[in-house]
Amino acid sequence: MAIQTRNPVTGKVVRTFKAHTDTEIGAAIVRSYQAFLELRNWSFEKRAACMVRVSDILEGEAEALGRIATLEMGKTHGSAIAEVKKCAWVCRYYAEAAEAHLSDDHIETRASKAFRKYMPLGPVLAVMPWNYPFWQVFRFAAPALMAGNTGLLKHASNVPQCALAIEDIFKRAGFPDDAFRTLLISGSQVEKVLRHDLVKAATLTGSEPAGASVASICGSVIKPTLLELGGSDAFIVMPSADLDEAVKVGTTARTQNNGQSCIAAKRFIVHTDIYDKVKARLVEAFEALKIGDPMADDTDIGPLVNEAALKDLTAQVDMAVADGASVVTGAVAIDSEGYFFRPGIVENLPNGSPVYYQELFGPVALLFKVDDLDTAIDLANDSPFGLGAAIFTQDEDEKERAINRIEAGATFVNSMTSSDPRLPFGGIKRSGYGRELAAEGIRAFCNVKTVSIA
Ligand code: NAP
Image 1 (cartoon, helix red, strand yellow):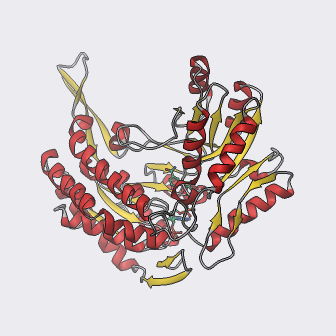
Image 2 (image 1 turned 90 degrees about the vertical axis):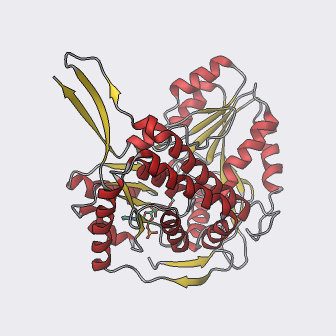
């Protein structure tokens, strides 16, 4: 794929970048390793001082950085600024919490002293997607660098300006020059990087095929991986729920980031007693969304990222309808320049349709009617994915059952699934493995060394 900025509002290429050559990539990996030899000897205090400066730069430049994200992938400028500020938060969180998460952990044994020691591994390759072009990178980079690892970024080919801006921020903040490097490379150049002896691990956020490819290459050379893949999160609404809140939150959970979020609420599973009411209110909320220029303050929904995304989503809706589903509202491409799509709702999708098991990576809500919570949970689990899930109910027994039985990396009760630096984040089943954020995120790329002194 060409490495270039193409504005999804117009469909026009704005800027094209030359991919790094094999020689440049090899040199960057060696320099990343040399930076690791330096960074691993820095104190937590010294790393934290730089990470706080990263946080300050992000806060101070959120508006300008947000503009790059909006230009490259079409999210609303307001949400892009919020994303950059969330990155500032994760940097500050790890600047403060890294030492506690990685301090030696003493254990009583027959030895005079025994403890766990968390040690960095070296350069880690991060293969990242375009949908949260800053957040996905910083939630990896902040813990990785605070642990003493260095980062090599292979960002999605359509967000090179975001990728270069991130590299520049780490440099300006005072980290060693090569502690965080952007490699401008295509997916096909990733294998060489993974096989390089000095690259010690990889993390990938993105689609299943990309994840499977990276994991199998790493498997063949015995390198650890962490995968954050797709999702088709359930959003269960039971009769005792605050319906106004459920509809408001559900609308945001499905349509934020122009509907292109891994943890978006994708399958709305609604109890039969309130189904018609919830459906009518969701329709009203979806139809009220303002679609348009993502730089405008009053826009709720900008364009999808590219032409392929628009075509794929349209094809999925068409197949769902051919298989027996009905469109309640929207769910069509808008006939204009750029990649605009009208948010929509689809109901009665039978489980015989392939679409039933797919991820809809755009603003289309699937609506299902169920008679009781057990059926709702069975339906929620009838998916190859297991990223997040949400349930709206006031009933304590229903909350408990949902928490215990839903197969997902997270279950949120009476709120939408979201990420928070203090909470672990990740999936099960085909949504991936491993956890980012919190203590798990910073320990993910550490050698947990057992030390025993007789
Ligand atoms: P994608 O095609 O897999 O791209 C993600 C990254 O992988 C890009 O940098 C891409 O580079 C690279 N890539 C693609 N094929 C590769 C290969 N064979 N080997 C190595 N690298 C490869 O994903 P996408 O479709 O853009 O992103 C959307 C997907 O990401 C959705 O499924 C979404 O749910 C998932 N996602 C998951 C999370 C999570 O936290 N679980 C978060 C956000 C998104 P190029 O751009 O150069 O192809």
